[in-house]
Image (cartoon, rainbow, N blue to C red; front, side):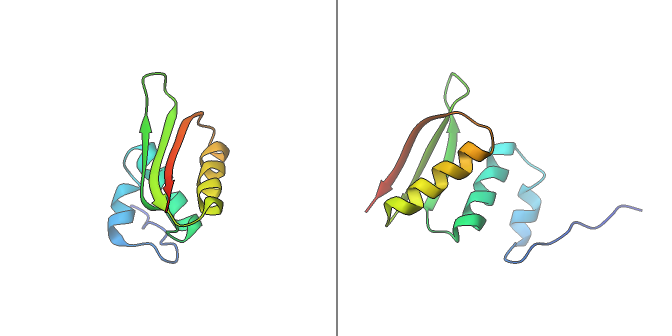
Length: 86
């Protein structure tokens, strides 16, 4: 019998489906959950050197910094943090 997935607080069904997908999607979801969606339109892209480019939009430099540190904790090397602060 297959075990049912564990649902975390605030997790939606599309999120559960994406968790079985690619690692960058999982990391995006993790960061969004961790930051309480303070970074809008968060997108992680790999450049040609397998380094991450962080994109999105936020209202504070603090949220931009939190997103960067969350990516660094995951073990990826960051090529650029292009999160716009408006």
